[in-house]
Image (cartoon, rainbow, N blue to C red; front, side, top):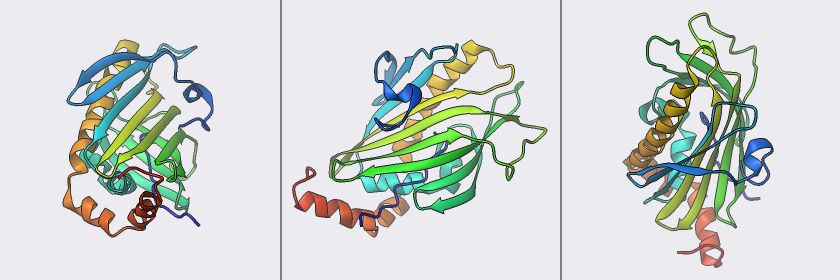
Length: 234
């Protein structure tokens, strides 16, 4: 049985051919920014003034190291921009869980929070895994007076094996922050945040604790088995 822990997403964040809705199509993307090895794309969403945003980066690291980072929910505030707090509400199994996430918003606006269901889809033979997130309601994380609850969020981490030392990561997010933030500020911030998120990921995958954990992981054994059998490039 192919068992892998490539899970934990979120957060925030936050869908591949098997995912429904706006993420089923890859058309309509426009390049908005390209810097520091990160490309940011936006596209219009029917019925909404808030654009969907996608960021793409190629990391000089192994795919199992990226999995280790995404797995470490408690460390998200260290590298995700504005992430103030993360909590695990419930874990159903290795690839399905419910997360609580608090996002810091600059004054004069209130901070936001969201409850996310995160699921993981894995195809190591083809060399990828995805972590999909969807906002939900959950009584175990009630709305707080000092926070604005985000009720409309869909996200995805698509992590693809290139070779043994390179991994492509695509992070896409469609989110309505709710409340009274002007739309132009929302769209501007969403693009900047996706860039900062991938820049943060680019840095944190270099940490020895993630590299060492990946070297000892079952993930590595599974991947190297596929490499030896010629499914994946060396």
